[in-house]
Image (tube, rainbow over all chains, first blue to last red; front, side, top):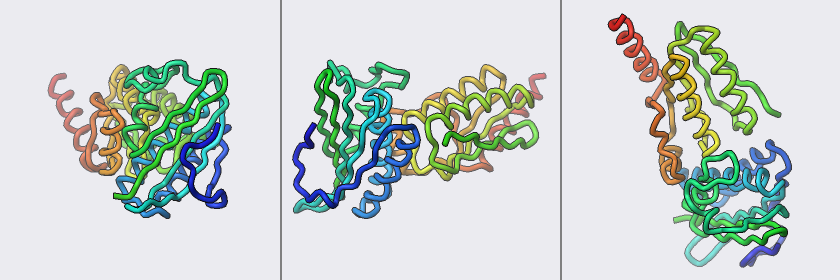
Length: 142
Length: 125
């Protein structure tokens, strides 16, 4: 799946494969590194890293593994961190349902997707049944 | 790299400090270990110190709530201490208010809560 709105050069993108439970920890650490580099405030960092943790776990548990690509991006109003999570898992048949609080197909509390969406500024979910899922989030400096 | 966190015993209470970036399996291990140790030591209180935790996501949040419920069934009180302000803000926005979990700002206050509990228990007996 392609990443929506990619506008920076590929060499700034850092990738973390998400194959094991340890990789979820590494994805969090990469998100934290990017958040610090970008200059996000402590609360914004915490929100972004928490969202990354939820999304990386989804990629592993529901997507059967995949990757996180992260980079610092800029716009006129400031900088931000963009994280893109991709998997080639079963996809999400009903995205409205999946984004609802409390809904879970697994053993979680059903806050992963909906919670992550609240913690970031931009949230784009693209999914196709049988093809996989891509979630792109951006947290901007304020 | 799933690990087992050390659980310390202070009198009738158990103390566990979350100081590393935990993977999910380590979180689940902690749940089981604490339940076992509560019974083994007839513990009356459990303190989970999250001072060093940079984030608490829904998985760890659920673990905290579950440990509190399990301990209660095993006749022990749980107090989560040391939550950072940014973590509290993030948890609420995430949708987890941890309603059933007792919290205290620091270890000292957490121990004081458990001591009050113990005193109330003794008065009842």
